[in-house]
Image (cartoon, rainbow, N blue to C red; front, side, top):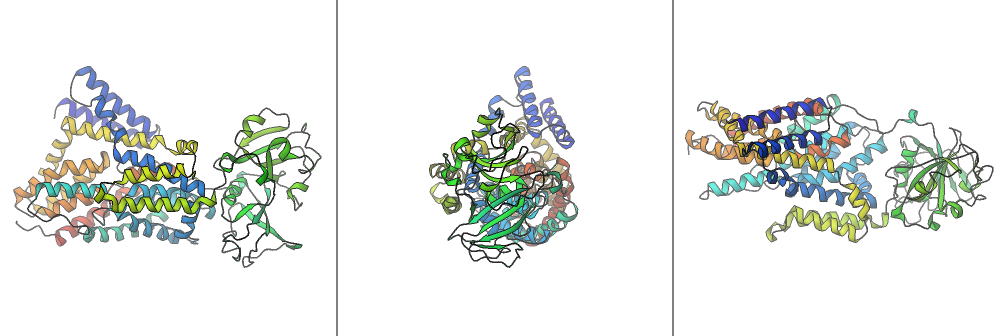
Length: 603
């Protein structure tokens, strides 16, 4: 190798060490490495990584699909469709094992026929919301989510783009042989998926860290009193408290139900809800935000519908009443709160004290009371310097879902999946289906332009694009070709050992660059090696497919691993702890079964 290739190898080693240290953000590390290679290319005149190649990743179809999917998922979130999907798929399992199985089995099945990226993008907020309701750390489920999607992708030819890349390379090189069938890889992919799911059940309990508890009651002394009303004709009517998911809410409990003139003070789990029941809850603000997202519940005060602001432009705001406020000593109704402030009080907290008034409007306010308001997002800016309040702060992600558009958003998502699945014969790919779905989400107002822009996680996109650039540098300098050839030569003519070396080499490359690039680099070398050994090349093609998807040990090896890194609160070392054993298991299963299913016999 020339000095250019050695420079790229050293730079990648530095990147891996920096990522493993967790001291610098992944985007900064990768962009810094790419910048350094481009600068050396310009100064020295050597062919290492041109500016065009460095930024080409930003136009990569896979990366753009990820960016577009953020908009589609935001539409699902804003309409409450995410919660509906979570309820139908995840339900209310009482154990971690139950949650894992109810999440991994459908994800694995869907990933066998659909692109992994949109599936993971759709399930990240579903699992996040579900974990909040169950009081469980999302770290226990986010990594298994990504891994389950990867496992499902190995079960069919269309499960992942890598399989299609290898199938295309096979068709080009062996035009006289049958093409690789849709379910050919399932012969090894299905056993590998079963073994992988069993391992993840064990790893989630003993190896995946339990990070950042979703809700800790001890850290928030504010106990709000909140009234909600059951909407007539909603799906909650006729359900019990247990069935409606209103029991065992983290940081929140149902204190009583007001039903006409009747007051139910001790509410049991089997109590059935009726239309226009007024439910009195006591709890912390995070739980109240989640309560607002339950379809069929609305704030009991009729003042909300009179607000002079469209629902998508409203949010929840906390405001502490000052001792100079004209509200002190007056009830919420007497203070004409909505008229004066264009905001509605939906809950009140008083230093941990239980407020016994049934009606929010009857509560007489005191200095120091914390009010939970529904108001236009501009309220915080307008009142931040007001003498009426000590403190004004918006509650994150507190805009109430537009439940009336939930079915529409779910239909758009289903249409996107169908179009991506069957549109290939018309030249329609995943990126076209995703772009159309994102456009419909905006056109139908399932989400606004501002919400769409804020939903994109630019850190993830920058890391993905930078990963493509580093992979390109390995190709340009010849470092990848030299390393792959030398490693495969270690087998010394033994077909089975050669197969094992091909698998390990492809896996290592996949963890360092992209899976498609790794498969493309190793495929011609593996085929020429099979020809020299005089054996059937099919086992080698299948091996490359499996190994290129076995990206579990680093977050940069596969984009879904990177997508769950932030929501799960993971560190680089977490992927090594859980992913290396997973890689080892997949290698053992693949290297053992592939020669048995596709014998290494002379051609």
